Length: 274
Image 1 (cartoon, rainbow, N blue to C red):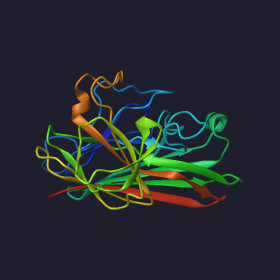
Image 2: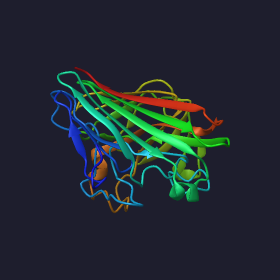
Image 3: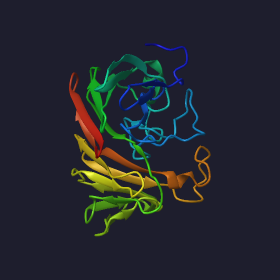
Image 4: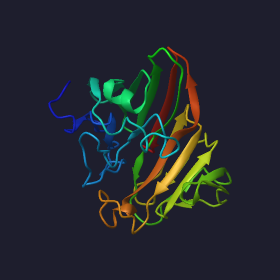
């Protein structure tokens, strides 16, 4: 499966095409059966290569979420090439891929631990399953935080987010001030950066144009919702493109402890109505 250029994506599947890349171990696109567009947004101006993070799809955040610690923002997994392990298509049923990242001299300069990250993605007609596995392959204990930073396509005005009403949260744009999520659904396109604690129930992006998309997770204890809003200044998000997506991210924001040989797994399912 190895390719000369890890930034060249691969699309597989005949029912619900799945696109992924070796750089960042990243799922880049999933188009449900009968849909006209991918339900994962990918910037037309994304950067790819050593030290660059692809804007869109499902970046893997590990071993630190955002700037919640001493490491580079969002850790070390999303800005380097991973190793492809397998890809396959079961005609008329599903498409699968598996990618891994292991520690090396470069990662140990950033974070001095032995680890193996694995991403497995399975695309069905109406659902995309993504599993993140963290294994401690070193001789010492380690702690990490993680997320699947999903960029979900939004069809236009009127899309709302349901399932987080009334939960405790932290406003990342206001020094993580404690807030309570509103009792009403959230406007998916409003500027927002909140970490919702204890959000373990399904979250629905209710989109009048594209139809509802449900985000269900296991292993992750929190959900981060982010939209940069207009005037964001992000070089790889064209002006106005912030109205094309919202990030709903299953996250593990309280550090998880792993002894040598231990394994942690978190899963995310994106599902649409048939």
